[in-house]
Length: 274
Ligand SMILES: CC(C)(COP(=O)(O)OP(=O)(O)OC[C@H]1O[C@@H](n2cnc3c(N)ncnc32)[C@H](O)[C@@H]1OP(=O)(O)O)[C@@H](O)C(=O)NCCC(=O)NCCSC(=O)CCC(=O)c1ccccc1C(=O)O
Image 1 (cartoon, helix red, strand yellow):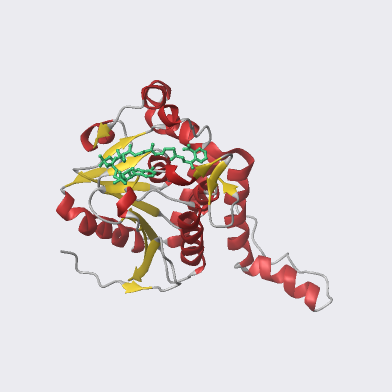
Image 2: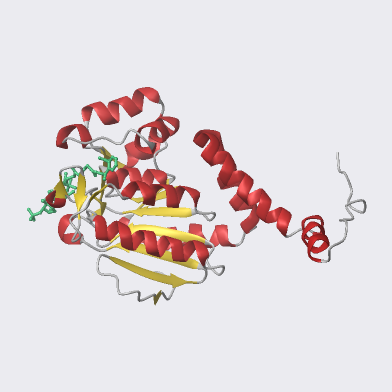
């Protein structure tokens, strides 16, 4: 039992549930009948919810989880996989989960994956992309791509190797084995393992601890850790946060104000720190 009261954010979603409490936004993939596999609509709704969480200044942490105890997410819905991608009502084949991966990765707030049951295939990559993973003791992790005719050579391969090392990443992808929560903890895939009954409480506890810390420090740390892996895109993310901070400074405001007042800017009053 968790001492938190969630408020539903009703955007007319069918495939996810989105709620908020105490500065935490929670996205729940709600397709337990297919072990929370995602179809294009599921991903579109997650993109919408994560964008809302990013833009809501009251939100400091986002939780991603699956409905029920059996699965976090089992990846792409193989029933709607057509030629060239996953096909929605519009008939267009998509791999729009890649957009979601980038949104979670660049969201300037910590994202926690709260994993009960299976995190498999594209669902495994989703928890991997999140900043932290809290696993229940019934969690099982693995990739299936080479078994089902798929692979994720982006974050799913390169970022995984940064986390578990090259040898282990190759084992995970080449053999398509499943790993239990203890094995996942040993290889650094998850941050902690708790009894299933304590998963929500532990996830909320971690969220509350981060909410008590400086949001700007967390934002810069996430951007810096990303930049180490993400090349120019990572640099853009880090530099964007630096520009935001500069806009908030008196020095940044002087430049804008001088332009609007049609006068030369006076930057002499600003110190040049070592
Ligand atoms: C997850 C399982 C291990 C769970 O096993 P179990 O508990 O025994 O349950 P089941 O009886 O197998 O499943 C119950 C029910 O759910 C259906 N189901 C499960 N997973 C899916 C799925 N992914 N798609 C559709 N349906 C699913 C299952 O058929 C059952 O239905 P019934 O009608 O009741 O029979 C196990 O279910 C399992 O292994 N599932 C498949 C996992 C998988 O292979 N996922 C796809 C991997 S590929 C992927 O995710 C693509 C991701 C992607 O979009 C991408 C994009 C860009 C670049 C790369 C990628 C990429 O490929 O990663």
